[in-house]
Amino acid sequence: MDTNPGGTPGGQSAAFEDEQRFSEWAHKRLSLYQTVDQQIQARIEQAVQFASTLTRQMEQEAELLLGRYREMRLEQQNARDLLVKEIADLRAQSAQERAAATAEINQMRIQAQAEMQQLRQHTEAELARREAEAQSRITHDLQQAEADLNAMRQQAETEVAQMLQDAYEERDRLRTETRSLSDRLAGLQRSLADLFQITGAVNPAGAAEPPAERPRVVPPAPRPTPPPPPAPRATPPVAPPPQPVRPVGSTPVPPAPRSETPAAKPPVVPPPVVSPPPVVPPPVAPPPPAVPPRAETRQVTPPDAAQAEGETAANRFHVEVSDVRNFVIASELIDQISRANGIRNVQLLRYEQRLLELNITADDVAALAQVLRVDMADTLRPGEASGRTLRFAYVS
Image (tube, rainbow, N blue to C red):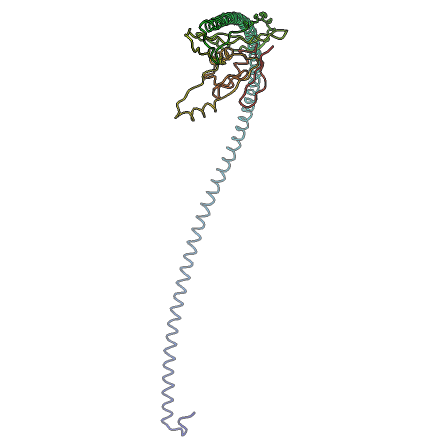
């Protein structure tokens, strides 16, 4: 909007001042722009000069680098040629060494095979020689063992025959003594009866009556000859068992000998009875009744009775034999067993007609059976074993 509508001179002067002020301002701005433009042109010229100088320096350095690169490339090519030549030389040398090593290995293999073949032949010859020596040694040992076994068998047969002879003589002596004691007993009984008749004393109850007749004594059975020795067998040598030592006062009684005919049973002989000293009647005590002999039983004190009975029952075994008639045979059997090799302790607990009850440790049962099979093989035949009983029967 026009502020000065009337067009007064005051309004014109104000517009002139504004134009003049604007002109001055534009003149200043133009001079400033020219100054800046001159500075820019000067800087551009400086930059162009610096760039040209830098370009010349870079071209010089590039030429230097290219020359150095060409020299290094030439050196590397020379080094590569040297390496290729060395590699070729090494390959040729390696091929030569490989061929030499292969030839040496083949030669060593051939030599080793020859040595192995020679060693195998030597070993086979040595084994054959040792086998022949061992075979000859075994044959010699077998012959020596057979000779020793035959000698042992002959010695055992001689000892058995001597033992049988001694046993028969002892039996005859016992029968003679028993017959003499029976005669003395009958005489004493007759003397007592005559004394009772003379004194008029009444015969007390239980007194011994005079025998109506003397007991008939059966003569001893004929002594059978020992059987011929069996044929020798080629068996390994066995150590002879130790001979039992007969205690003082024991009577050796042999087992029933072998014979073709059934052996006669030994007569039942009453045990020896010691006559009582003469006593003036009345009354006269009767002689003690004949009691079958029994083996000694281990005596224990009352406090230890239960423990000892338990130990005895734990170690109690039985040996059953046939045709055992008296305590002499049982004691002789126990005497042989108790002194056998390997049995430490054996004790006869009970004796009956055909059963021996022994107190023996469990570890010695096998040794007991071995002794009965070895030492008494000619007179005992092993039978069945059941539980804690070993059964053996006399060979008739």
